[in-house]
Amino acid sequence: MKALVASRVFDGSNLHGPSVVLIEGDTVLDIAAAAPPGVETIRLGEDVLLAPGFVDLQVNGGGGVMFNDSPDVATLRCI
Image 1 (spheres, rainbow, N blue to C red):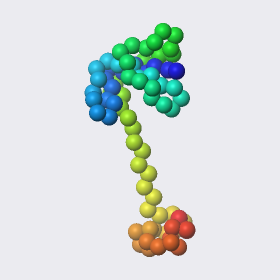
Image 2: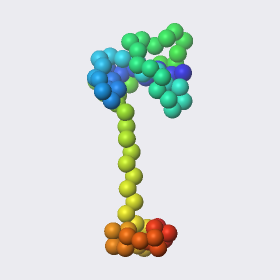
Image 3: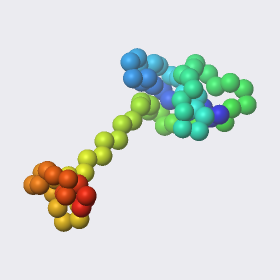
């Protein structure tokens, strides 16, 4: 387990003041006021807002074709 310390944490619904986000691997376990004893602590920069991220990948084409130009199965296979 590791603890990320930030001056502000947004959990997707609420904005927390100074908090610790406890993580294990790629899973968020909890948001706490302090890290448990013995847990590796990573302090983020001052005035950091820690918030969930979202990566949106959009592919419109590939292999020399654009799905917008030919929205069919052959185009999808080519891409």
